[in-house]
Image (cartoon, rainbow, N blue to C red; front, side, top):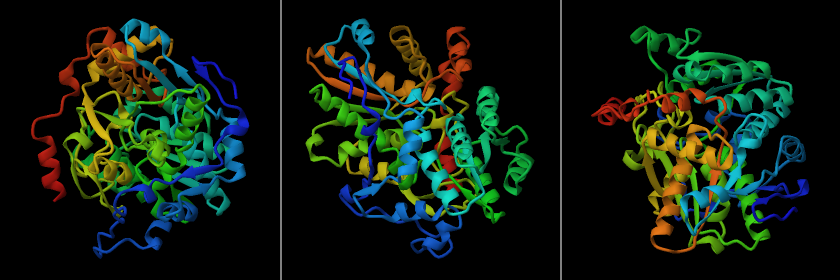
Length: 452
């Protein structure tokens, strides 16, 4: 372990050996997925038709710890784990706050985000079971990039359906995926029945994660050589991300730092869950504040309903109990493509419902301004998604300043923004307005009515 209070690194052998399962630590048993055809809890057969068998096993496990196979640990180490925990010293100075702000560097992975943590695991499990091809969706492209690289590592094909508005805004994400060997198409596409249906109704549809999920699932179910791989929402995905939080705990302990607040952005919940679950599972951190940050344009936790809903637009998935804006909800064309999802991870939804996680929402203009300030101070341009966490951390640090109290804040820098220059260009040129990312009046109510 290398101890430097401003940049805390761990040795390779400190990569966690187990995943932390939050399910046993919930106040109430996690509501099971429901088969929409029967209204009963979905059988494992429904899920194994879609996912690798080991992922299905992990989805249902009540074990507090799940062993990480040696092959996955070696891959994690090969691609940059453990990641550094860095103190935002210049940002603190700029804000003139007594708060100490740390950020977990998930941006240092080869694909630029935390997503590789679960992509490597899911690709490994699928390849070990004889799967030849993985199909998936991606919003901003961070997940698709991670799947593309992971499939290359374990010698299987990757098929990626990318939300069309993000495909157009972030062209070079597509180039990165293709460089790793993946096939990528904008969604809605003309290569699936559901995609053609959407395009027939609206040829200019910007796409949503729900639609892209439906296309990837249709692809999966139409081929015997293919399994579906998911970048967020389900428990096995968030389970794989808990390497993040375990490392943060070890890093803070190495400098005798006690955390007061943990902050992460939320779309489906994977980077946030990955950081906070190990803390929530440890009674030593019962007094920590956990803040989940989402866009006002897609306010799943702050304005959604806690109910059973489909995870995709076509209704191909089992129903999940989660906070949802409705399966037909189409968010505005904001730049934080990874946060444009109508639902939220059932585990995070349960914790919000229990009052153990506090959700807040910000407009994309104030979020990107926070990203610019962070870049000026720390030399890193954050992904628009990650800038949501930075905005919340800045507000928390200013609150500490107003109240003249010390506080330790840790945020997850879930990814860099070097493929997101269009967002910052629009902001800095003055062409980005709050209205562009505003939620149309009545949009949530309409989506709920359509879902019902």
